[in-house]
Length: 395
Image (cartoon, rainbow, N blue to C red; front, top):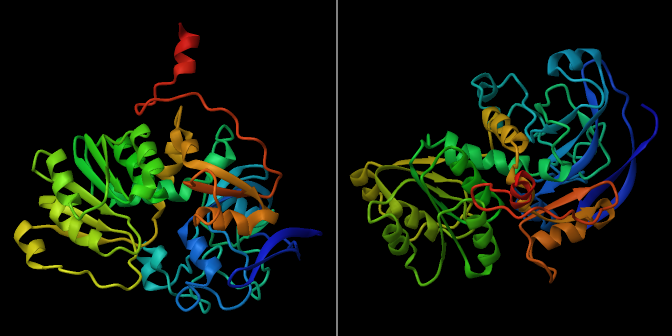
C-alpha cells in the first residue's frame, strides 16, 4: 500500500516526535489497521519516562501504544480467512504477539512467550528498526502481523469506549477468571486505578454479591466512580487500618477473593492476606518495583489455606469476555474515559495520566489520530445500570 502513516516515535525517555512512516505492502497473510483510538495505562507512563528501559522496554526508537482499536484498512486473503475479517471491520488487538512455537505458546500461555529473537514481541514495544516500524497504536495506521490476536467489535461500540478493552480484560482475568469468582462472592479490590475499576465492573458482571474497593485519599474521584459502577463500599486507605475496616464491612468473615492491583506499595500484599477469608484466594497483579513485602509471614498462607496467584497480562478468553462487556446494552465502559488527546498531544496525554497537569483528575486517557471532538453528554446512570433518560422515554 503506497503512502505514509502519521506516527508518534519515542526516540528516548521523554522524547516523542510525530513523524511520517511508509505504509507497508500488505501480503496474503497480514493486514493493516486504520487506528481509531488507543488507550494508555501506567505502562505507557513507565515507557515514556524510561522506567522500563532496562527490563522490557526497547532500547531503540519505537512507536508506543499497546491498546489499539480500529478498522481493517487492508487485509490479505489468508489473513481474512484465518481471522474471519474483511476490510472495514472494527477490531481490538491484543498486545501480545505469540511466536506460536515456544513451550508457553504451545501450552496456550502466549502472554509468557519468549520465543522471539527480539523479546518481547508486543505491540507498542517492538523497535522501529524491525520492519515495517508501525508496531504501535500511537499512529493512524498499525501493521498487523500474521500472529496477531484480534477480536471483532460491534460497530455500535464507540471507539473511545472500545479503547478500554485492555483494562476491562484485565479486570475479567484478575477478578473473575483466575480466582473463579462465583455469584454471591465477596470480592475486595485493593487499588482504584483503571484496572481496579475494571475489576469492579467484571466482578459485578460475574454476580459478586459484595465488591469493596480501596484507594488513597488522592483517589477519591476514582472511589466515587467505583461506587457508581457497582461497588458496594469504597474505603480510603490511611492509618494502616485498611484490613480492620474492610473486615468490618464483611461482618468479620473476610473476602472470598482479594485482588491487589495497587502499584509500588508492598504493604497491600500483607493487607490482602489479612482480608482474605479462610480458604480464600489472593490475586497479586500490582508490581511493587522490586520492593520486599514488610512483615510478611508465610505461615498465614498455610494456616488460612489461602491460594495466592500471581498474574501477568491477560489471556484470550478474558479479552473475548471484555468485548462482550463492551457490546452489552448500556455498557458503562465509557464512564472510565476522562480525557482524549490527538497524536500531536501524545506527550501531554501520558503526562496527564501521570497526574502532571492540573485539571480534571484522570481515570482513563485515550489517544486518537483524529481531531478530538467535544465529549458527548452521557445520561446519568445508577450503579445497577438504570438509565434515567430511557426511563423517561418509557414513561
